[in-house]
Length: 590
Image (cartoon, rainbow, N blue to C red; front, side, top):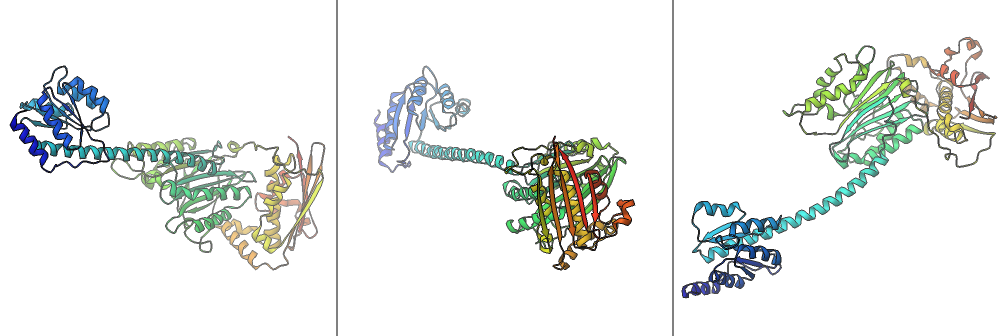
């Protein structure tokens, strides 16, 4: 070593070092140079700065030492035997992969193209000889800090990846549980077509369908505030209540009030639940719906090939106000065979194209004014929406539902489970139930009696028929016997809503003398059995002897009730003052 180089090295070592050693990180430096003097100077300088130093005489040795010792910084010469600095740098960077290992070229080359090539092959900086050792140490310090920062970011990224993987596993499990709780019921019926496209893993839109005990269909479409898991949380109690109430034969307004009460209790003030709850009667001729906050409900005439009704929301969304302030205005429609009912969330009309324009209600309604056959309309509307969006990303949950009001298509075999009857029942049995004012308001005797009666082996397959008979007889006794309501109210404009309001008022005004007694008597036969239902009420009755020639005029039945009972019962008769009725249902084992 020349005296001048030794004095410079000594001076550099005696001065305060620019590089502060970090004892928590093992610092290793690799010097690659075919000149022994240069290696010696750099070894001393780096050792005094806290580095563990390794040296290589050519590029091939450098590659092996990189593999063996994993240096944190490399000082690289260009012109060397075996492998030059360019070749060694490319190989080392390839071996390093995602790990950042700074390489500084120290060279006597001054040609700009060759210096530029230092960076092209993966070098992070360069100095030309003779170089300032102070500047060299500053560059090493800067690149080492950058390397440490890079490692920290990688560690944080890896930690995030671990947490993200854990979160995805939890979300997968949660979604599985969520799907089991919020199952779609009977959305696989041939009369139903639907499209559900959530914006995230969890859907803020909820679509439920379930058969009623009478054989009709209840459907709920809901759109919760926001997206993802927070929006989906409310779906769990909604689903549970909807299926439970439907199974128990609750009416649309009863379902709405129960859902609103539950959501008002559990949702924070800023959350609400736009929804439509609808019922289609068991003959698929009558549609009853409640509409709160969703876009318009559309009814498409299969015969006329155009919209017959556009139903706007007239009620608050669920969870906004308590039941005293919530309106339960119902819309009632007669359906033609094959008419279609369409429900959708605002994600459809607010779908955006590449120019940030929305699909809008006008474009949607235009789809229904093109004279398409009813059986093509579902696919036609969705194709229009997809064409409009193009490649634009989805910005909201998308839900679109079609229901075909065709009873022939809706027929499904009700599966029974022989394990349902958990207690042995006698073949011949009887039971009675006495109901008064508070029972009329608080209980659902039809559901209770249906559940009891259909526990008998074989009768479960007749659950729909038994529910319909009990429901018709009980409602007849309550509405027209105990409360004295007139069915003709239902024929007026908005008559069904008026009838329900009158019913509610009469119930509240009823004195304690009102009653309904229901008795069930079952007798086994060789092929099944006979279930006789007796219903007596405290009403004034009517002159049934004068009406036997035209029982369809009976005030006790509303429109379709009489022919329905006539088709289901073996026989029935009125007694007393017309406030006693007996109906016999004959059943056979399948």
